[in-house]
Amino acid sequence: MENKTGPEDKKKLSLREFFSLGEVGGYFFRKKDPNRPTNINIKMMHGINKISIAIFLVAILYLILKRFI
Image (cartoon, rainbow, N blue to C red; front, side):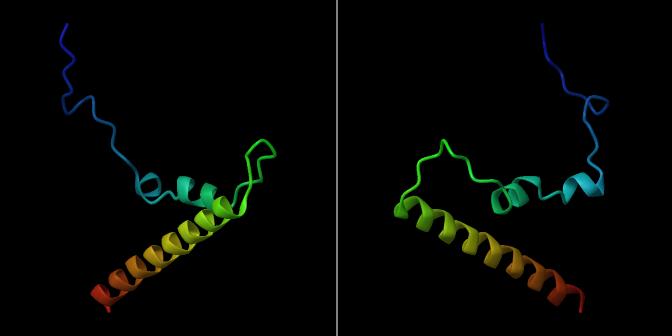
């Protein structure tokens, strides 16, 4: 049995779904899990990841604004 994906099978993304920041927002604003191990290395790693994501999003906004202004 072949699994064909034609144009009628593709789901169109709405603009809201395209720009949803669910995963990123969940990374920044999640509750602390008591079962997750915590030590200074993991805290530093997550802190650096949050800073890099924030800088990346600011850079993308800057490029978009620079393009249209």
